[in-house]
Length: 420
Ligand code: BGC
Image (cartoon, rainbow, N blue to C red; front, side):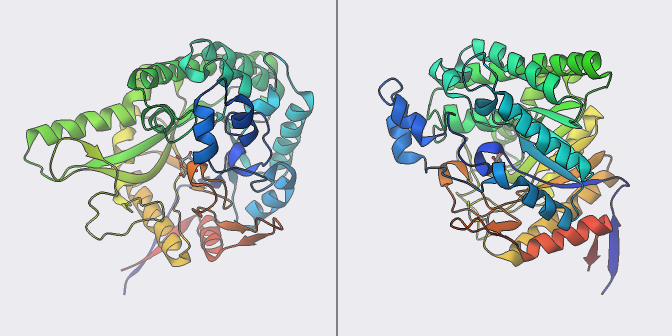
């Protein structure tokens, strides 16, 4: 057997990612909260459906209070970076009113990470909105852009000296797809034109927020900010290569979903590319419509969320995105499973492909496993387990899984062994 060590670039960032609503617990007044659905079911018809379809979030991982313990675990698994999001509804609980305690809380969190020498990737919007914004029509309304900019400016002023990398918006295409086209996420809409509007508003919000963050940080802290957004990307494949219609479909689906937001926002509003990769999208054997991976898997390996495991897809996407000539960070990649051997293999195989992509010209500088903790998985509730660390929902006790130790070894060695 031949053994080979795949050495990652110096200063490579090894991290994990979370988002506020999925881990903090008790986010109170955002549009994913059961109390919001109850309170507004007469005003917003989708709230009654949400009460049936959206599992209650409850205390999640109580990360809002237990973050010091979680940061200690981050260090234990040799992570030198952490990606998380702010809960806008905590910071601006009423339109135009800032909650000083909430922003001070996040500041203490960031200072704690700094003390531990952990690089900070901060997301401003990860799917949830304050209740007042949802009541005004959310991102389907143009004024959401103005509100988001005001919030961005406030956060940049308050935390701008501590953030290493800014992510304005998490997965604009995923948000539009799940919340406005398929309607399985809040606000449970199935309306193409509304989805299109939301996508354009998110693009406008990113463009403006990019400028606001740069200007605020330059003038207030005399520093240069590093700003991007987290793009959900997929590898696209077709069944029948020689069918022109299929090929065109692959081409356009790929362009729209992986490059659409870059095209709308322009090259100058991204200091780096942040990508979230989980699965490939394959066209159905017959017919022109694209399908999620569940349809024709031919007995291949799938995850608990029925996603096809296709590590080479991350290579394809990375090499393709190298055309932008920007540093790339993989801000999410992970698997829902109870099988720890499968999780370890998933991480290993994806990192192997990331390594080859760097050899092919992609300037990859960091990798974040999703997720640090077993957490609230949106419409799926607590069943899918993405975490490297399990959380007992009754006692909140944390336990490192074997995959956490496996990932810790990779981070420590700044690379991985390959046997073949
Ligand atoms: C989202 C996360 C989610 C993960 C797994 C990503 O698209 O950013 O919030 O938990 O996928 O489904």
